[in-house]
Amino acid sequence: MTTRSDNGTLVMENQYYHGQPYVFTTTTTYKGNYITISKILRTLVLIDISDNGFYGTIPEAIGDLVLLHGLNMSRNALGGSIPAQFGNLKNLESLDLSSNEIYGEIPQELASLNFLSTLNLSYNMLFGRIPESSQFSTFSNSSFLGNTGLCGYPMPNQCRNDTQTSMTYANSEKNPTDVLLFIFTALGFGICFSITVIVECGRKS
Image 1 (cartoon, rainbow, N blue to C red):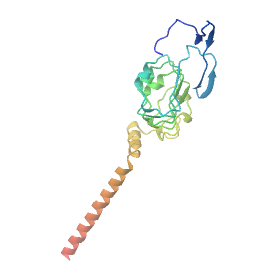
Image 2: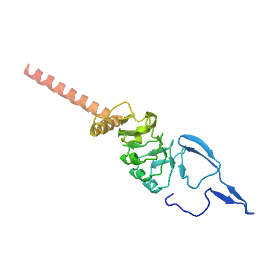
Image 3: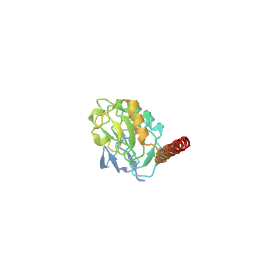
Image 4: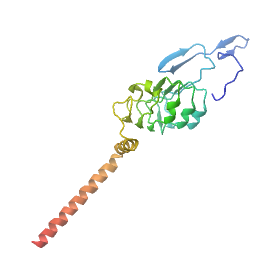
């Protein structure tokens, strides 16, 4: 997946013990479609690890797999951010990271992937401005659904500025315990202040 070899056949195949060849077949999800490939071309390089229980961050080393055409890591429990190293995947045509727990901004490096025709980042926790490029302008809002913190085309909510957008989303994601603690602290301060005022007024009377 990192270097191309000119050796071997165009189609992935093996040989029976008596020397007759047979080809490999596989079933995978590619560009959003569930397909069966009866003859696997060696030039078609795909990774499909969807519908598993994988968790943790996405390895940055995937950015070294420069021959990759399709990457599907959807419907897992992956967290962390999208590696900026994905910008090195110049042959990538399909990227599906949907239905995970990925957060942060979409790397601007993805905007340079000129062959990327299918993108699905829906139902994560992404926020910030969607990269602007001729390639990204071809994607509909279905590619970004379920990420309430995203703004800019093709989403309906427009960005004010990057700082405000990031801060607004970060504030909305605060732990509810912190919010309750702040409310109770404020109430306690108010009650103490009111009691002090009442006592002072009583003394003067």
